[in-house]
Image (tube, rainbow, N blue to C red; front, side, top):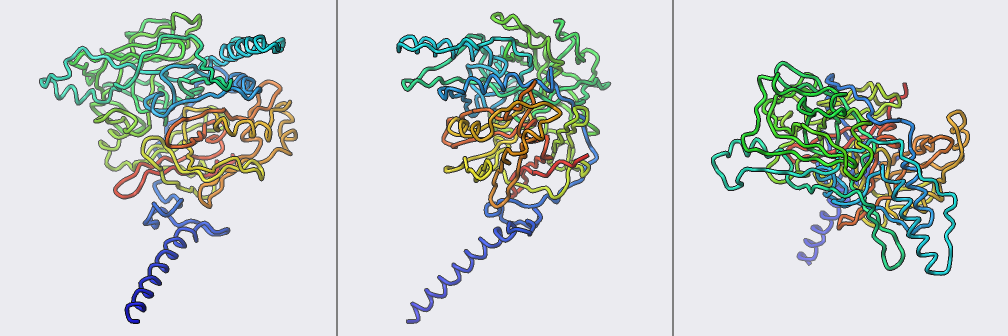
Length: 535
């Protein structure tokens, strides 16, 4: 009996501990109650969220949207039109895109949507003819996309040095920031795979449609450039005065000859970067950088010395953008082993700087801001809810459900949300896109009446544990000419990680102030969300 009693007591204690642990986290999510502060939440593996209690920072970088037209969503419209027959699936792979982000080593960009749409309809017509049926494509109108901006396509790493040469260990360590895991792409031919069950599989090289640029200084004395700040990549490079193409001459360029702190790489490393319709090449060096009031010395970066268009393209993307460089804000794990990101070096050399940054994407182009080392309470209202990053590769958190009105469209299997400042639109997998377009179809509207037109459209809800965030119809729909279009793309991400959902700048971050906190010690990296302050 004593043994039975002892086992019963042990069992009771274990049950109480289990209940306590569950309630410790669950109690913070009950209706009307607030989560605990992140500093009070001791077990992040059991708590789905906590309240931000970090730093108020005055270090801010003003950002501007770099896109030919802020109101042009023709590529998105064409993307939706290609889905009408339910036989098209767009896909990207983890780790094959820009600096380890989503993409493919071959495929297309959003600027190829006209050509992809035409090719799909050609293949459908051939199928219909072979089957004794004719597909009506009389309403097909092929126009050139007005949105010529797309982000970095792929990188190729070249080195004339011997990998086994130990004499240049110091130089090699300096150049460990240069990415080696990229493939040069030369073909602009339309690639469409056709499955046995008559589904068209279309790879996308990347999802970059628009970018935000801000002030960065480099050199001694300082030279000012405005590169892209991107949470979906980790590389660092700048356009230089060695680039003589007209597309280079129209932007601010860095002149290494005027800087006393510049050092050219002694290993002969070369930079080769391919965009959707152009290529840039250059060399490698180290320099002193200044982001706001913070200094980073001996930072390895790529120097762009040439920009050229794709030989198979009549358009040069660099003719349509003011491109000066890129600063990646992603995790070092996107790169090959042993590399250090610009942000990691920034933290290492500025010990008083907290490992945090935050984005405010304003409805007004000239007011968007990147805050370094914390947040600014001028940009949000209410509390900031922090969600732990599941794996420090992307800024990625666990997702429990998505509702469109009362209709649940996700998630029967483990799923994830990725916050990406380089992607304009939100995404869902092909298995859910048709349902989404049925529940929130495009409709005729104008800038004067779109709120009335959309008043009966449902809210979209993302569920993270017991935290639910909402997007109203006016927030997730975009106005293109005389149409209101759902700001969603159909993107599959085939992998063992199950479904990934992206939240972009136009249809999410413009409505939610977003905080990125790098993990320290036993605390994970986290992403914070708060409602943008209405101004």
